[in-house]
Image 1 (cartoon, one colour):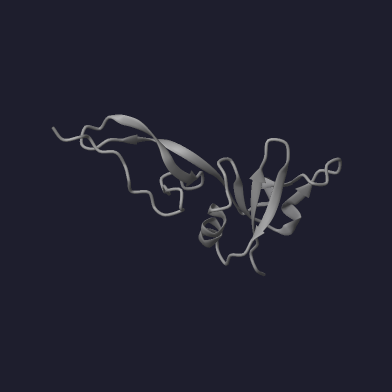
Image 2 (tube, rainbow, N blue to C red):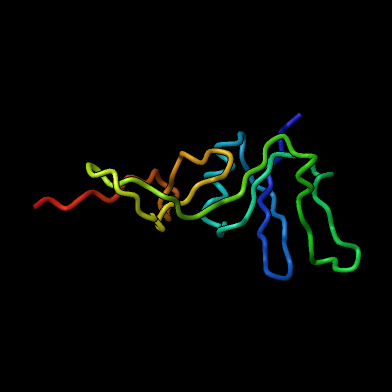
Length: 120
């Protein structure tokens, strides 16, 4: 049976779920990234996990309990300047909370622009 992947666009008032055309979890993340905002989620789950609110038919969401994989897209992290070791807030990074040590830039590529101490 083919695995199914979805992204949930979490809105202030309404959330919507979209199917992702991917063949594995990592590809689903890559495919969905450009259409995601901070707080949006991605999931591997059966279609039965997609729930709709009976009172608001435009509102759909993913039932996390039915998912084999589930992650939220987060932005920003505390990082360490080299070589001093001073902490700073790096607001340009993105990551999925199921892999909090794997960081991306705004294009979904590996983030490698960490701050360094200025040389005297």
